[in-house]
Image 1 (cartoon, rainbow over the protein chains, first blue to last red):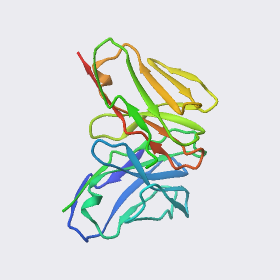
Image 2: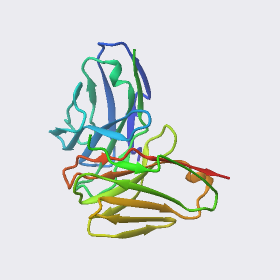
Image 3: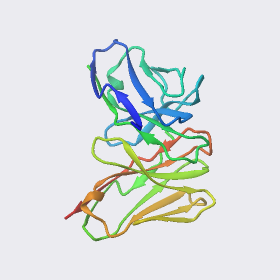
Length: 113
Length: 111
């Protein structure tokens, strides 16, 4: 099993550009989520999904879009990048209900100039 | 912000000593989890404790939970240099799937 994979590993964007961060898992997990981690802080939940076709907002959803058309994939779209979105982004997945451990991807380091 | 707080923010100990870190949270929970993050990498799950449990052990790890005080502690016994990492607690938002992570404790174990 590859576990949770994320691409790209690094990305530099200019303000106003859009892009999609990719996340895929091969463990047949229903739950998938996106977090951002800023220096010296813990992870903050952006969006999550409890199954294909079902998504919901987390703590910091503004400026981001998600969709879940398959169990395996959960892409995160930045609509119009801003410097405040410079961060490390982590994707995670788990079984439901919410008493299972989350498996994390290696992260995408995004810089917006 | 709903983020939990962890203390200390940083901890430096000698190999072989015990390390204790604490987590406080704000909302009710079904369970609380602890994760480790090595520098610049993804998080790795360590242990999960349910709201009706008070203590749980896993190898050199011991976790306690006090739901009346909304707090948890993680004890790592006989620490090793390989335990050097950041440690985060995470709560499940009382089964809402809206996980809330603490701000983390940076542990450095000196050989």
